[in-house]
Length: 221
Image (cartoon, rainbow, N blue to C red; front, side, top):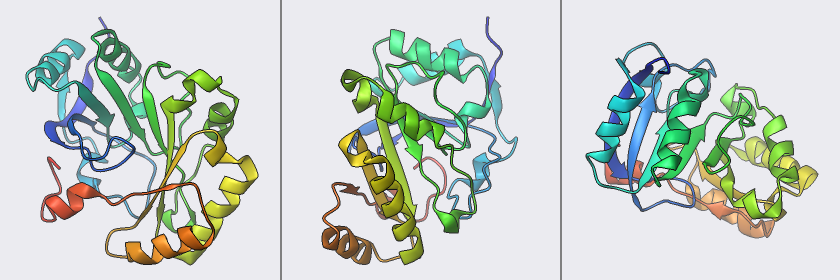
């Protein structure tokens, strides 16, 4: 039996980001993150606050919602070694499984059936990027490229220009879905939309739907 996982919360909500935005989704939010992103909106999950749960207990809780879409997030879920066992078991039980990761740890050991939503951290975030993940996505066989999505959260024009350089260097939008969003309360999404249109970028503009649906919530949303 694998070691228990430190769980911050498990809840049902509307998927607010990624190409799955708008769909009901069960979220398994794990505790702990050493990424240090300036714009973290889940600071309550960055530390050691949470409940130790066995994989079986987590799976039972997920099953109780009766929803086929599940996202494992954090915190930074990849900091807990046994998350890989949980992801594999969720896939084996025929859930559509998403992993949202801060992008500073490699995803090469993640079950290939999992859709990996990987942050690319621009300069304003103050956090590091693991560009090995970009290399992995580009080199992945075509049939599995849909299991990689990259997300860039933009706070200003400098962030946007940085992201533009990454997209062009790797021709990333030719290989997988790239999502761009504005830091909530820092950049007007319409301004980001104008930049995207001016440069004819093949990206998906995203709004954090949960922020608009439940602006006062920092948990369970």
